[in-house]
Amino acid sequence: MLHAVHHPAYVLPARGGSAYQHDKYGHVIELLRESGNLRLHEPEPIPRRWLEAVHDPAYVDEVVNVRVPPAKERRIGFPITESVARRAVLAPGGTWLAARVAKEHGFAANTAGGSHHALHDTGAGYCVFNDLAVTAIRLLEEGDARRVAIVDLDVHQGDGTAALLAGRPDAFTLSLHAEKNFPVRKARSSLDVGLPDGTGDADYLRALDGALAAVFAFGPDLILYQAGVDVLADDKLGRLSLTPAGVDARDRQVMREAARRGVPLASTLGGGYGDDRREIAARHVRTIRTLADEARRARSFVD
Image (cartoon, rainbow, N blue to C red; front, side, top):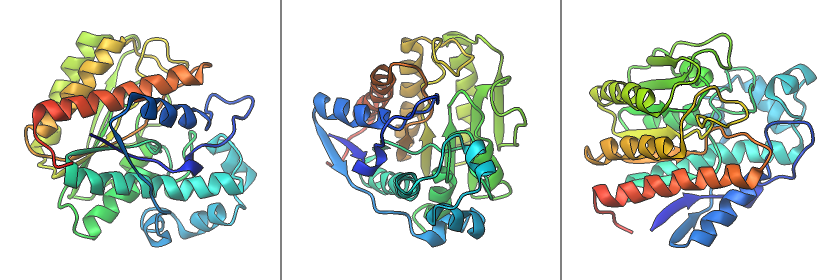
């Protein structure tokens, strides 16, 4: 049984002129349903106090009340409408719920989230609120985890997550990314592995092996996995050269290492860009299904 977190409000109409389109999430849930053996969990909006635990309350207020200044909207990459604002508070609730479900079943996927560029007082790079940092802080503060690791394998560095969790001894941030890709100014994660343009499967997986050793040396009791599919060679905003088989191997490696240590893992969608949104959605679904399949191989779950 695959446990996935989804809310109908994750899906918004397509907008012209942007590489990021909210309508791909409709294709994701449709493809997940078609593949069967699925149990869906519906999130609630994240309580405002947890957004304000990592974000400037003034910025939270701007989003919630739909009055984000144009300069911040440009940095985010799209306007903050009422529907976008609602989605922005649901997605962190979804990542937190996925983590809670993963604690019970070993693995769960949020069909949104992964907003790793959002910073303390602004969104950026198609990210409004940083669901990864918000979820980590809530889990730690409420006692649902003692140590949380964010394994960010998006092609872009998780600068917002790194900045928001910097200095916390109970949180570990790994970012394995294309060094010359966005953002230009990198933050400092617990561990950054910047890869050269064109890195392929073999070199990527070797780098991942070393990075995961550091993650598990930290001793996390829960992992939040930013499972970006923008590492694929033909991604519109990527600079790496992984094949679909390489991404499958990446996802299996992450889940296998977590599962054999008994560490629950919750995944978020991460980046994936292209003109054919259904194809991009299929890539996300393949990652989710691969993670679930490897979880079943690695250990028994209570469904």
